Length: 360
Image 1 (cartoon, one colour):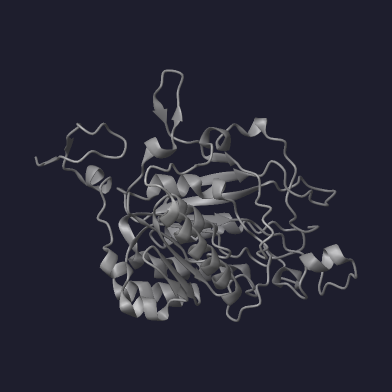
Image 2 (image 1 turned 90 degrees about the horizontal axis):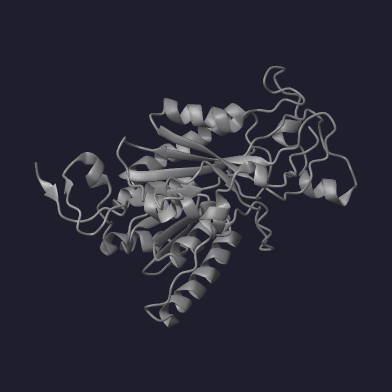
């Protein structure tokens, strides 16, 4: 059997591994810089430099451009709009469909468009929260806080179908999405739970407060790139253990105009574990650009897609700043990374409050 001379990310440099599919997945091919700087892609980009591409377009459209150019990425990490939670003021946006089953299908269609863009050894991470069906009709309150949370007639404010779309019903959208992805031939590896230790209290009287969301880990194939050493925990005997699937991470409080920003700590495990050296991170719902920012800080190339021109401009400004900082930094400068031991602490160490999910 042919032996692989190069070390995997989780083995010592002098270890020689058998040439198997599993071991080959630990040394994925790297997308060439020529493909990354494809002239057709640059012409369509809102912003482009040697390490960053930003597209102001519907995710499915821009993913088609990447596939057409033959560009493939190693890690897709994203937080798509949650159902009925936000109106980003963009025509054709995902998240305001009349029925949640249409929303779920639109998400699956988007990630199917991403399939040819993701390497066979690549990984997909999707942060998704749930929604309660309200059925309360048009919001009429003059209270400023309520008006900020409700934007006219949301889909879940309609009468509903009387079945799983009826008042007070938790729609279980993350679960329906994950099952639909399985039906589309994606491999579900984890339904990681994001526990929020200090979110805004949920004003309800007849149920528990919601203090978690999901970060689903998908793969295309059985064998894929995963660097356990980069994100692992150490046992008392010094062995590297995999990270826990419960992540205690405070919600982002960034005042950047984006209403649903996730933090760098939340996406540290996905990016560090599943992006090889010189790899590419893609966020098809990039928003204010958290994924791009962390990817560039860690030395990876990054691609962001967003339907909002305002957020693309925000990402562009930050991309220019990061590019300048990296040019000025000395080669030996170490990149500061989040404390993963704290991030994966047990749930009972957190003080649970909750995030706003409406009075359902």
